[in-house]
Amino acid sequence: MTKKNLSESLFKPQFKQRETSTLVKYTCPQSIAASDNMLGGKRREHWYRMINWLTWIWRGINPLEIQDVLSRIAVTDAERSSDHLLDTVVGYRKGNWAFEWSQQAMHWQQKALHTEETEKAGAYWLKAATLYSIAAYPHLRGDELADQASALANKAYEKAARFSDYELKKLEFQLEGGKSVTGLLHLPSHVQGPYPTILVCTSLDSVQSDCWRLFREYLAPLGFAMLTVDAPSVGYSAKFTLTQDTCSLHQQVLQQLNSVPWIDHTRIGVFGFRFGANIAVRLAYLEPKLIKGVSVVGPVVHELLHNEKLQQKIPSMYIDVLASRLGIFHVDEESLRSEMSCYSLKKQGLLGRRCTVPMHSVYWEDDIFSPRKDSKLIAMSSMDGSLRAIPSASTYSGFSKALHEISVWLKDKVI
Image 1 (cartoon, rainbow, N blue to C red):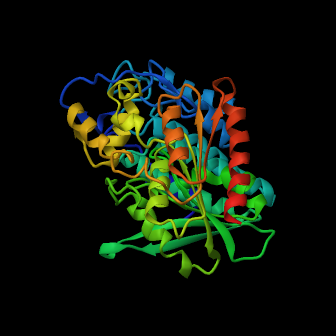
Image 2 (tube, one colour):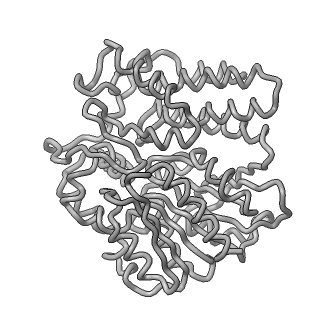
């Protein structure tokens, strides 16, 4: 079956799928307000989703292309589940979020299929993978159209790797209870293995293919391999539910790295973004002998998880994401807040205790998701801790510069 036929078979015109914003129900009207956040996007007044301009541009999507897709969604007069929210068109048709982003992905997919230039084909497949991932965003459980888009993103990402100068290996890790999880191992081309490796813990609203630039531009040039593993209930980890033992899945993967021939298990670092930082820092406490260093960006480890005032400032979509990861689809806000507090690494008795693993935390100034207090707590809890601020005035350039510094820091600690 060709890529075109696969796309068509997965996305036949249908109007019965539940619309994304309706997947999580509330027992009373939400009190959580909308607000902006750093790099993670803006929850604009007439959009359910946070519009991740800077993140999507960083992943290689042209801003004019983003604007074009958003405009197509905005102008449709199709039925919406919420009349005041533009990205809530019901069914897979024009104006629907998954439809429009998938159509854009198919454009690049077709270009990849028809070009004879290897480098261009790889770039086109990568664009298609990124756009399919956006079509699936924010990756809520039970979102059929998102699941289909994710499947196409994974296939496009594997295609992109075949046209690149690095090697991508799809690894299956056996877990407790007879289950398994898939991780993607990215191998640099210019050095000999086994490779020092960075285990990447993704955020709750992203998938493994979203990390391509981190590897290509920051880790691979320093000789690192990169192993990505999706957060529970996302992507390849969709069948798992997030629990208070947030790093359980990643911990079992980490314990098996000594059996992976391409990985030097004596030189392992961990990187985490947003809630992925919660996973990464918890790993440092539970497996200090297996990890040489942990670096995180915008960590969600304590403040947001226990501070009700902060929770009221974040976009409602993010609350839906948290509820979805926990397997909660009928939400009582008070109960959810109580449950979220249990995920605080400080309340779990970890952060605040001395950790032997070096830890480096990066935060944005004025970031409601991750206040400076969280990064300071991480840095002070490590025997070799440090923190760095990204000025709010230079969110994009500051992020790129911070990733470069992080990769150098990891090289110093791991290699």
